[in-house]
Each structure stands twice: as C-alpha cells, then as structure tokens.
Length: 617
Ligand SMILES: Nc1nc2c(ncn2[C@@H]2O[C@H](COP(=O)(O)OP(=O)(O)OP(=O)(O)O)[C@@H](O)[C@H]2O)c(=O)[nH]1
Ligand SMILES: [Mg+2]
Image (cartoon, helix red, strand yellow):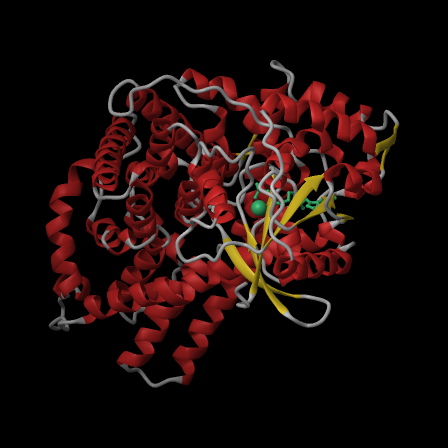
C-alpha cells in the first residue's frame, strides 16, 4: 500500500454542501451558493486529522451519477476512478448527503458505495432537516449503508471533528483490508432502496415546510412570478444608484483632495503629472465605483444564498426554451453578470455541447460588473438625476442597458441555434434548493472577496495600462501652442482609429480610450480621465472632474452611442482567453470577437444617428 499523503474526496449530489464542508475543513474559500452546479472544477486543500496528520482533501463538482454526461460530472467520475491526470486516486471517499433531501441523494450515494472503496458519509444540513421537522436516525442509516454516517452542519462547523475522525479510521482500514466489492444494482433498484432507506432513517416528519411550499406557489407562479422577478431587479438597479451616491461622493472628494495635496506639495515635474493625471485621476476614476459594485453584489449574493436565484432560473426556463436554450444556461448567464469568466466556466454543467457553446458565445452580452463604472460615469454625466413618477431616471437608464444586453443575448441565441449551433433545446431538470436566510458572515465574506478582486484589478491591470497610456500621451512633448494629446504617440494612433469610428459618432478621445479598454472595460474610464487630465494641461480646466469634462466635450448623441457600444463590444482579454480554453481553439473566440464588434458598431451607429435625427446631437 502506498504511504504517500492520504487523499480524501468529497462526492455527492449538487448543492449538498460539499464546498461548504471543504471550506470548513481546510480553511479554503471556495465559492458556495444555494443552487446546484456551483463547483465545476476539482479543488484540493489540506485538512488535518485529529492526530495532526495532513490529508489532501478534494472538493468535486456535484454529480447525479457516474455515467457522466456533462463536463463537470466527468471530472468527478475521473477523480473517483483515479483516471484524472495529476490527481492521485482518493484513498477515502466522503459522500455528502443533504439530510432534508435524503431519498434523492441516496441514489448516487449507493452508486459510489458499490465501488467498494473506504467511504464515510457526512449527513449534512441536519439543521435544515430539523427546521423542516425531520428527525433522522443516523444509526439506522449507518446500518443500512454499512459505512460510518456522521451528522454535520457545514456552515456551523458542527460534526467536523467526528467527520475527521471517521476519515482517519477509514484511512487506517485502507492499509489493512482489501476492498470489498458490492453487488452492482440497476438505477430503478437503487431508487427503490433509496426510498426504503430514507423512510427507515426518518423518525418523524411534521408539515413545517408548508410556508415554503406556499412561497413557491407565488414566486414560481407562471403569471405572478416573472413580474415579481422583474420588480426585484428593478429595485436592485435603483439601489445601485441611490444608495451608492453618498459613498461615491465621499470617495470622489477624497481622490480630489489627494490630487490637490500632491499638486501643492510637489514641485511641477513629470512625476507629479504622472501621479495626478495618471494614477489619481485615472485609477481613481475607477475606484470610486466600489460602492456601486458592492451594492450590486450584495443583492446577487443575497439572492444566491436564499435560494431565490434557482427559482429565477426555473422561471426563465420557458423563455430560454423559446430561444433554443435550456434553463441550465440560466445560472452561467447569471454568473456572467458578475463576470463572464466564471460564467463561461460554469457552462461545464451543461450536458449538450451545442447548448453549451451557444451559452458561452452569448455570455459576454450579460452586463458584467466591469461595465458598471463605464455606464455609471456616462449616466451620471448625461442623464439628469430626476424622478420619473416613483423611480429615478438614472437607475431606469441603467436598468434599460441591462435589459438591452439580455434581449440582445436572447436574439443572438435564437439566430445561433438556427445556424452555427443548430440543434434542439434539451430538457431541464433542476431540483429547487431550500429557502435559507443568508448568514451575515458569508455575506460579509462574499462582499469582501468582491471588493478585493475589484481593488486588485485597479491596483494591477488598470494601474499598469493607465500608466502606459499616460506615457504614450506625454511623449513626444508638444511644441508651445500645440495640443499635447494630438502631438503624442497615443494621439497619433487615436487620430487614425478615429476615422473608423467617426461614422458612429465617436470622437478622438473615445477612439483613444477604446484601445487600452481591450484589456478590460473599466480601463475606458481611467483612460478617458487620464486623457482629459493630460489634455487640460495645468490650467484651470483641470480642476473639473471627469463628468464635467465629458459634458463639455461630448454631445448627448455621442454619449448614448458610447453606452450602446459597451453593451456589445467584447472588450475583455480574459473573456477571450477563457473562451479559447473552454472551446479548445481559436475558432470560437474569433467568432465571438467578430460578431460582437460587428453588433457594437451597428448598434452604436444606429443609436447615434437616431439621436441626431431626434435633435439630440
Ligand atoms: N443550513 C445549512 N446550510 C448549508 C449546510 N451546508 C451547506 N449549506 C448551504 O447550502 C448551499 C450549498 O452549499 P455548497 O457547498 O455550495 O454545495 P455543493 O455541494 O458544493 O454544491 P455544487 O458545487 O453545486 O455541487 C450553500 O448555500 C450553503 O451555504 C449546512 O450544513 N446547513
Ligand atoms: Mg461545490
């Protein structure tokens, strides 16, 4: 028997709490959320056995069976079977069961047990079972399954020591005994057995979950459900603007006084200009949107944790089927509102390859959080902060931009499913997770992680690109009386590109911002801020903020065209890279770039000319 570090793997149905257990046992911070299909890759961490011995613990994507049909389930099967490259076969399998959903989860559990490997069972979510009025006899289940059964509550760290102890004992048995092979049974037989075992283990059941059933009746109602979802999203976008305002003003003020401080304390020099025009004006222009990002994620994380998000997927299933997608695409598309990169990765839970490809191709149309600073800067500058009836106009415009992205994605899906990714929509079965109140700790941790990601991007990529742009904007130096931006290298390039984008109403400054913004969309904001700061030179106009600069230099028609451009334009290197990885080649990322740029150009142009015709030019 090999005596390398012991390897244990967490296996089970989706949404059983595997990642929550993994985090609790290893101190990792894997994403957990209250819907199936969150984990799509294996992830290893280190946990300690009670005797202090380290064990490699592997978190796996949830699975319904070992005959893997989707790419993420394939990973689970391979790891369990020891066929995954670079991953030692687990010595111990930890089956994670949702105790309030026992019968269903016992089906896959039996299939894993039939492998005859050293196994322990974590009877997780016993708190939810109790809440729903279920009392479960872990002993009876242990006798029925023939392996140790440990009740756990991953999110409250209950039962963790006992689980670690059971893993240690199972691990010791590895070296002593040869594997016992269990008889192989068919799926219907497993279902029947699961039913019997679940009923044998459930001691009592009261009808406490009636409230939740009633909530589902309303929230999932074919007529009442969608308006509720719509209204909820509407509130979210109102909040993004109105709640963030005071915080954003404070940050804005801070950046302003920081710039003033540098200006008064340092002698005029290129370094001083780099600090004020590049770092503070440029990077600062992006950082001030942190409050908005956090408010958006507060809602997303809350909806995920409560179980409402999965209901939204259920509601959208019919609409998705209409354009040839299944409700399974909903979760990846939803994740893309945060960022298309994890969104595209989570398409691994989609079984049908064409379904999956279509979802990957339209994911960048979902409004990712990197677009928020771009939209917000333009909206704040050009859309008056007025009430229209009960709602604010700025929030309404933001909401509309999100809707245009979604409608665009659905239209593209419809076309793709009838051409390049032709095929029928596949059926959709998703178990609905239980309603839960989000824990303050998880919510705070999730927000902290988002803030960290955002600030790290600002400090690394956005900072680098902005400084590079500042250099290209400052050299060669302009002669007296000449415009510095026009004289610079960046200005020359921008003037060239401007010819191409002039027909859609874009000016030189926009052309200049679009190139560095290929790295990431927020860079458009920092680039504009830096360009205006450099262009203004040292005179009084520099005191003006970015919003005032935009207002004085752009027409409303140009601003609207710019917004339309960013709904479609594929300005994100990471998305292209992840698409290449997930589709194994350059064909589909190339296709994605082509069709999105074409749409961006078309829609920005249409917006511009319509606005001009309406007299907004
Ligand atoms: N109340 C309660 N909630 C739990 C427990 N364990 C996990 N959860 C919650 O259940 C949800 C699912 O947990 P995850 O850890 O993401 O589930 P998973 O098994 O990794 O799911 P996939 O990655 O989709 O396969 C999350 O909202 C967790 O906060 C528990 O013991 N009690
Ligand atoms: Mg998981």
